[in-house]
Length: 140
Image (cartoon, rainbow, N blue to C red; front, side):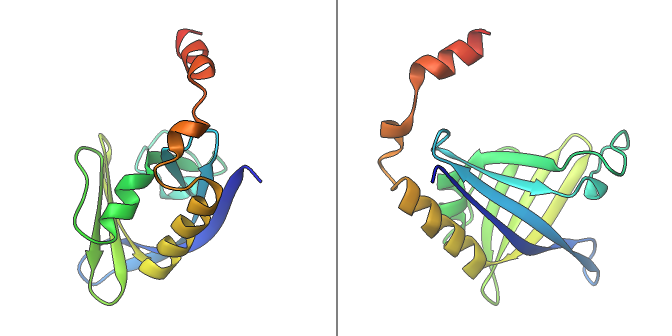
């Protein structure tokens, strides 16, 4: 097994009193050991050029950011993760089109991280990096 994939429920916060549920597919690839991926249904895109039926929107960010953000506010730039009341975790995604604030059950995120660590333990990511392949992809 080289991939961990799990579908979790999240709430997209629309305002102080409004939110909607959505499914988020989380994945972790041993071939990309430093990153996690979160895929959101295309209909939740802030990009007006995205239409229904388009591919999911995928955000890729550091596994370490997700792990740290469960304990203390973390993140610089486009992705911020922080603990919230009631065993929840907030993830804020910033793009030129706007900002999305999502609420997750912390237990779901911890379970996903635990399974990713079974595949590639923290601190051993470097053992799974293929520098030659990454360089070839970068240079085309």
